[in-house]
Picture 1 (tube, one colour):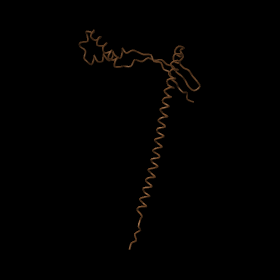
Picture 2: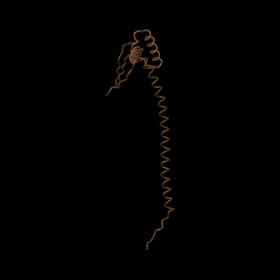
Picture 3: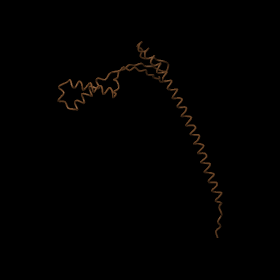
Picture 4: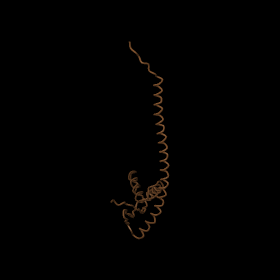
Length: 153
């Protein structure tokens, strides 16, 4: 005859429930802690962005003065102990905007009407001519820049 030991299911079920609640409680505590840390970091990042924007504005104001001085005195480089400041000038064409494109097409069509020997050209040739006209007549703009190079030790 086999002896069956009676197991107290109520006690086992209660222990399992308590264990699950403890795990859930620790997960909840960790979750709340993570949310608080995340919100703190988000706030800190926003404050730093505001500070960074102010620094960039101040730097831009100073940069304009430095570029003007360097241009007027024909200075290209300024060296410090661990940095080098380089001034350079360059030219580039103006950005191609919808307004500029419309104006250039209008100018091209007026010029095309005045030319009488274009009757034999294909649409592709006219399009290529128009593209060349638009790109070649864009206004050039002078750009100055100030670059900071950190010297390697």
